[in-house]
Image (cartoon, rainbow, N blue to C red; front, side, top):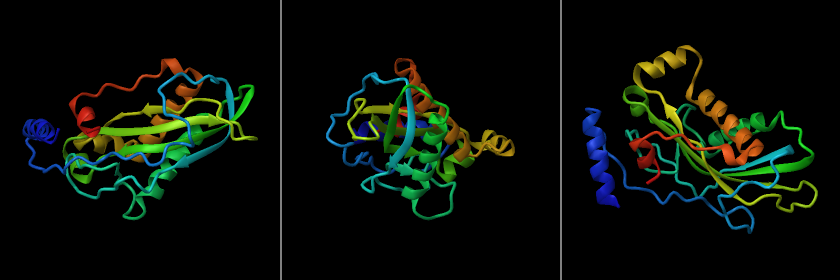
Length: 216
């Protein structure tokens, strides 16, 4: 896998006229699974809910990288906030997005939305300046009964990737107020709303080679 990834990445770097190195692939750890339910990509049986609470966990077992490469390895890549606790910074972004996404839901069943982050790859400084890429984000989610904690759905893995702007496109987006944080927050809010309202309709975006490399 390492040889294949290095070969693919070398071709990518040459095509971008870039010379950044690439770290070895990480384990992409997801931490402990949500409770004792086996993760399963399956339709949620309760699409019409009122979410009264959102619980977002960013496991400390995920690997944070600060390497300024075009495609660094790691589970969390986030640079738009000042240097600090990246776990907390990412948790704040995901929490805000999920709360916004469920705000207008008024179905007949009350539920708590539990979310556990698996991957949060935004852009490094180098990729933001020169090439752009993919905001590669994944999380596990489920609904539970607020009174008893009984699961109302299977655990579902959601891949929520988004095109990431670089170079002039990034500068133009920033001038419109579209920071990485704003774009990711808006995107995740739309994703979680769609997954809860119509689980079978959601499909992750297809963003090519960079999307594949981010998951290795």
